[in-house]
Length: 367
Image (cartoon, rainbow, N blue to C red; front, side, top):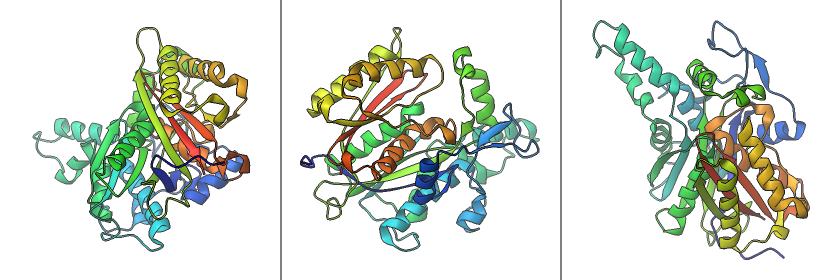
């Protein structure tokens, strides 16, 4: 029997990923398991990598039109497109400035915003005749919350607007933030997601900051944005929702590594929610490269090995999506549950481990 809904409900989602634009493209790609890595054109993509997982055919002006996109950078374009596709599903019409409302909030996970925009703007201050001889229209792109702000302006989302930065765990931290906005009555509905772009700047940052263990089994860099719509449990469309957000817990790894911190995080989530391991249907690990991924897998096997849950792997064929990774884990679980009648009423455990120490765990009760 399906447990009574207590937490906010995920009523819909959409994604812009290397599988394509929109929810259906992501579901089809996930089911096929096909790789999306392509050879990079060195004239367009300078950087240390030769392959990457890019959103196919993603040219901002072609996807979103010319209006309001002249100075829009890639990370903002990806976020705006994902919100656009989600609002199309919700409203059944082409979204615009009147699509949102005073009680519609947006919480977007990111890493630094656009590393490429930040570095390009900084470089211009050195190369121009004077430091202030820069294109002012590009300055907003250097701010971490540019993408969330542009989404709100373009679609009239006048509720709380927030940007959360927590590395690979950004998507789960954003989900936690959105859950709190609903339970505290600060919003009537919340769009929650996370975004990451592929760029030369990001590729060089990854190249110089990855440890030796990470380089050994690293996948190509990926990009994209996944966005969920959260509504209160008593909302009219909650009954037809996809999953209840039971709880989100987080922590920080100390000198002893990620394993103890993640173990405490998952156990705390189970204890506070009253969920037993026997109720767990699926597990979705973030599977970062290197020792962090090994530690995460070991923790989850130790906690849930006896119940033999279904493992929903991070969609590796779309590459390392960094800040958007956890958001893609959530939509991968929802997409997988569509084909699994035995998932109804059961719980999915989604975990994230970031190399900078952030750990997080989310419990979703599937509908």
